[in-house]
Amino acid sequence: MLDQLHGQTLRVSKRIANHKNQDARIEEEKLVLTPLEKIELPPEVLAARADLVSLFPPTGLPEVLMEVNRWTNFAPDLTHLTGRRQPSAESDAAILPALFAVLVAEATNLGLATMANSSGIPLHELEAAYDWYFREETLRTAIHHLITYHGTLPLTSLFGDGKTSSSDGIRFGMAASNMNARHNRRFFGMRRGVTLYNHVNNRGEQYWIDVVNCTMREATYVLDGLLYQDAPEIKEHYTDTGGYTDLIFGLFTLLGFRFAPRLRDLSDQTLYRARKRVDYGVLTPTLKKDIKVHLIMEHWDDLNRVAASLKDGLIRPSILISKLQAMQQQNPLQQALQEVGRIAKISVTWNAAHQQRKTGLFFSFFHQRKTFVPRKRSRVKAA
Image (cartoon, rainbow, N blue to C red; front, side, top):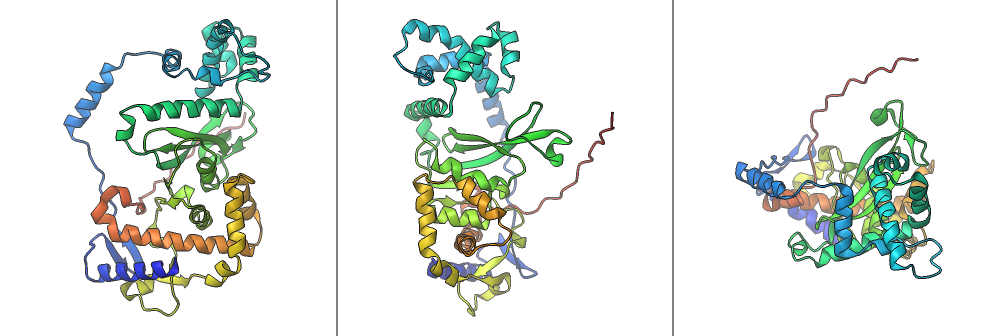
């Protein structure tokens, strides 16, 4: 890894010195990449998109669910908790309206009481369906069923192979009490809320979604979706800056994933030398620190044990990461993971500097800082 990084650093330094990449330059001992311009869609494309959307008949979510169930027959995957005997066709048909109503209520955050009032289905029937049929294992089975069917459609393969994905979090305020809800004044004011963290691959399949603590950094939960999902195997994953830390880079490398975060403020990132006391040309002033190779070598067996434990499902990645980050003092294992991650991070940085103009948007992971105008927060008067 270090030999490859050493050669990569020399090649990037030579290209920048010879002005072969106008998008990468050195300013005040910092590496700066020119931000990409926003791609505007031609009016013809926008008009064609509007024409296509107009072809879809207006319908409601329950009708969409019933239509998809006719195609895929995913409803039987939502099995009863007891499951002592095979349900009859009559009982399956009788429970379908309640199952679809609960799915819509949960997906739209309406709640079962509101759904009961709007659908006419008694509240006790919705609660019974929710208690007996909706569990993590049944939902995952149904999602896997839908993703498998989606992969068989001829149009799906035109979007990609499903092995590249990205993840991001969406924050929602909570009116009711929830185990994961936390106070976060920046997003919810005086209320509590949660983060809905979801993973989507390049075929448009949302293969993982989780409700997580909104006060935790999103990077804590990135690997959960990659290791515990039932979609096609993911090889490459993208996140924004919130999904990145050196520790996450290290775990991605050990687990065999390619990590490509869009890092904001590249010029403020600490860059590391692959080898000590080596002249890397124009990049030398930007390389502030050395990779601590001795830490990686001393803890190499422990690093592999961690990767094997994560692969075998013995521990959830988010639990391991949160425990390591909660320590008041870094332990040697955490430091070794970060050193591995820094090697991978610098390699991705050099790829971006080397290929930005050549490959355009797909390989441009780094965004320059944008002018941030803070929003005025409304004051809440005491009652």
